[in-house]
Amino acid sequence: MADSRGRPRTTAADHRLDTYRGKRRAERTPEPMSGVSPPGGKRRFVIQKHSATRLHYDFRLEAGGVLKSWAVPKGPSTDTKDKRLAIRTEDHPVDYLGFEGIIPSGEYGAGKVIVWDTGTYQNLAERHGRKVPVTQGVSQGHIKVWLEGEKLRGGYALTRTGGEGEPERWIMVKLADEGADAHRDPVTTEPASVRSGRTLDELPENP
Image (cartoon, rainbow, N blue to C red):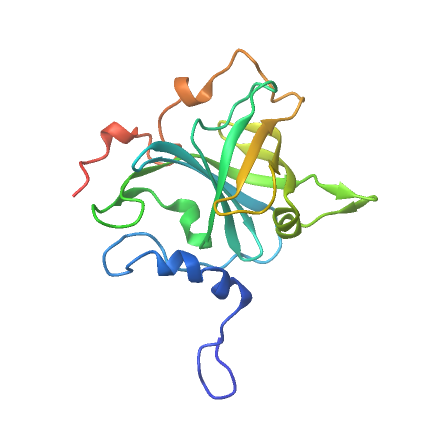
């Protein structure tokens, strides 16, 4: 879309991606640099298993035209007693929902990435009987969502601990519902991608 002078029109989502793009060289990494959320319908989420400097899981929610993102070192749990550290990271473009591959050596986040789980989600957060938008919840330090993924289903809450900082530290917990299972450990028992069926080890070596 262009403005009255024919120049590309920037959106709020474009500006939210400034940090993301500033850390990456588009000519060197296969990672997407843009993406547009479709109108209407349920919002999407993805959890990517990422073997960067340290293995972790990237949890991303589609909201406000971007993917709100957290790095979860131990990955999500289905046990309501577990409190998983989640480090808030920069917003990612919507097209990152389907990204799977290898970020080359020397680039930010270098390593292998697979789509460990993906699906849609519903916003559960309310205040005084009204829904709290996910983007607002992120700013205020608390969100609550219902995931409908291939591996994960049910409610999850993320809460920022302490004041705002860099990086922001959050805690991710499973809510008590039919998706909770203290005896299940999908991070360990279900390592493969829901997109390609491959594990990280089955991807080619990092170039």
